[in-house]
Length: 246
Image (cartoon, rainbow, N blue to C red; front, top):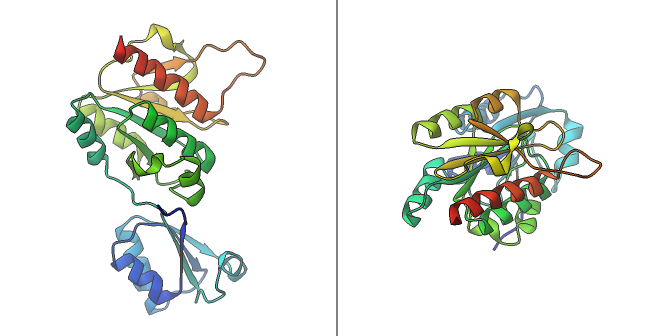
């Protein structure tokens, strides 16, 4: 079981990592550097839709572990990502209607790790995260998940809104956590379902919210008006579990 986020430094090492098929989350390139090897790396990065950051030398020096970055560094996922089709296949193999968790803007790796742990225990078939404005499968995520990262597939997509539309065509419907919605106990959460959870600060984005069929409100009686994202996900997930068992 490996928990290290893989840091790859140097032009040859980064280029070979791309060509070997390794999943590269982020690429850092020295601003203004456009020679032949760098152009080759950029071509490979664009094939996989890797996030590319052009940064100053000071930033690369700060990120480097070896001091020999040669103007380029990459971060690879600590664990390999799945495809959305893998998640649907997992549900099919279990003979269950798909239950998928979709995360909009979860940037705290501790939250993602906790969500993976709860998703696995609640019987979700997979988790989908966006490529941008979200944490990936880092070492912290792996550790916080307490091993769940080994058992629940995580897919990373370029456009969460488009993915929702594609899943709707496959029969899923979607509910998002939102304080302006209907109390979750009043909603029918059975059948093939996608549960959308947003960040603590901003919640589910407007465009994503518009794609959802329902908005679910968690009853709260305290003095603050929100829950930790992983806790909200857990509460709603187990309401889905309760209804499936009823």
